[in-house]
Image (cartoon, rainbow, N blue to C red):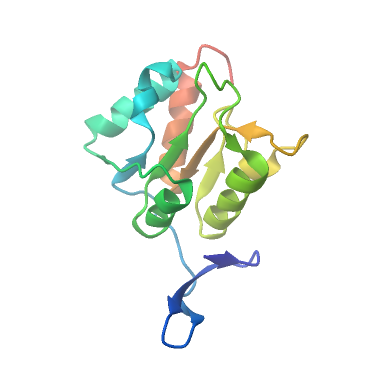
Length: 162
């Protein structure tokens, strides 16, 4: 995946010539999908609003697909739609993923394809001010309608006004 700020193009290695060739021009993320991606092993450590959103995804018969690699999960979401979640836990109240070299690059690509990327405080990832090299963040990223739905769950059920 590659963007210069004017959309997203996908390239695939052609081993016969040793070059990456344009294979997916002008990628557009679907407005919604049938997948949600979250490490449900931490379910009980998530805030109530995130647990309710995950329950809603399950109740809607969305398919849980969590590879354990943000890049791989988002690659699938770019083509098939869905949402990737990495919320805060008690151990990582600010989130675990690094803003500078995990959240920001993925947010740029997803937004250029028509998706959305916010943190669990409902702030746009690309608007967050970087204050330290290894600054961490939560993230909800993917199909715009699904990110909006997660946002409404946070607004409705959060114990802390957002």
